[in-house]
Image (cartoon, rainbow, N blue to C red; front, top):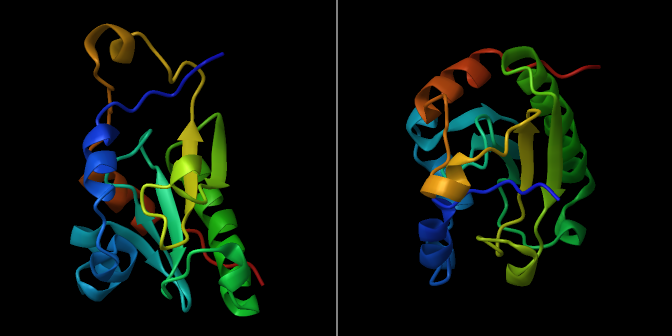
Length: 165
């Protein structure tokens, strides 16, 4: 079994355990008014796409509704449709810019399932490359990220794929 290690996420997990819902990153980031600083790569009407500040790989996107909802069943039909549309557009954008060999997409529902922020539904989109699990995390407790978040933001936000009719 291969593992995708992200040891730097430990600080996030520790901090998130005392998470204050009034300071939800998915509520605060869109209100900041500076998409680059907030790492928002695309805003839709009901949902948005943001780079993960603690990524597993370069281009790790999170897609979330603006409304603070915890479960998929709480989404209305328009939010659900836009969430899946942004997933499709995000995958196509990552394919065009970073050219991954594959991707993982999924929801972590609840702390036990791996949700760092369990009060606000968000969909992970993780680009993957052959050999993206290497010796560095095992030997040096270090993950090699060949691209900065700022460079990822610029590349992905500028190339965001338009919606298909």
